[in-house]
Length: 154
Image (cartoon, rainbow, N blue to C red; front, side):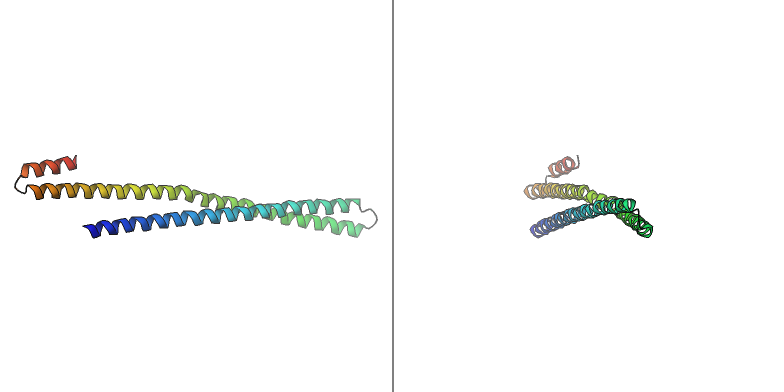
């Protein structure tokens, strides 16, 4: 009985440790991905500024039409790259960061379920021990044993 209780405690602590570890690492990963997305957003903003600057230079160029056209095309290509970056940011936020942030509530629910299940098990063991004590004190008093069994069921 003591061995069973000890293994139950070990199992409880092992599961709780695993949940805490998963929660900690997932939160760490989520924060690192958020920082990564912020840096990509900064690069996108800088790229947009660069494209505007190049476009401004192209519009100011009046003598060399080839340079003006090439700078305009380069500005368009650079703007397209920044649009791809923006799409990457939005998808990463929706598909990764949002999904990983849900794991916090999942871990909390798992901890709650774990606690409830082990509390129910401890309660059952307590009832069983009480019944065994009652049987041990008075093995011939079936009325008292039946009363303890009925009280435990209710």
